[in-house]
Image (cartoon, rainbow, N blue to C red; front, side, top):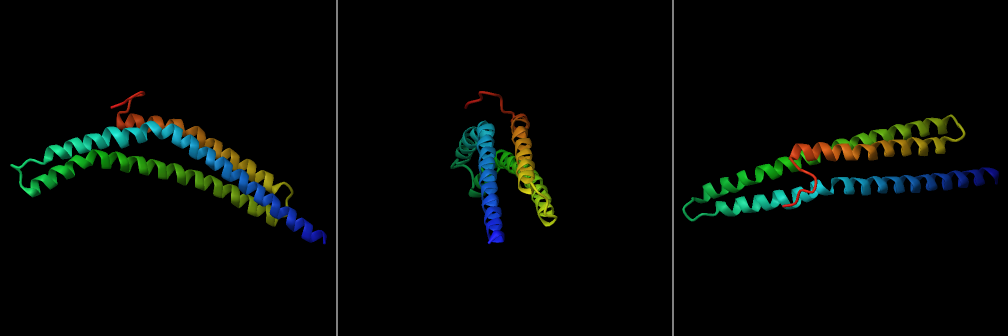
Length: 157
C-alpha cells in the first residue's frame, strides 16, 4: 500500500510540475506577443500595405501579362524577406528555449534514476531559469529585428 501511495504522490507531483511549466511557457508566449507586436504590426500593415500599393501599380493595360506578373512578384520581395528573417529568428529563439528545457528534463530523468530527492523541484527551478532567460532575451530580439527592418518606435503608417 505504501508503494502505491508513493506512486500516486509522484504522479501528482509530476502533474503539478507540468502545470507550472505550462503556465511559465504561457508567460513566455505573452511576453513574446507583447515584445513582438510592433514588428508584427509593421509586417501586417506597413509592409503589406506597401506590397498592395506596389502590386496595384503593376496593373497597367499597356503592360503584357508577363510584365505584370514579374512586377507583382518584385513587389512581394521586401515583405517576403522580412517575413523570412522574422521566422528564422523566432525559430532560433524557440530552438534555444527547447534545448534549455531538454537539458532540464535530462537532468531530471538522471536524478530520478539515481533516486535523488528533490529532483522535481530541481527540474522546475532549472526550467524556470531557462524560461526567465528566454523572456529576458525577447526585448533584445525585438530591438534587433526592429533595427534590421528599419522600424522606429511609435512607427505607424
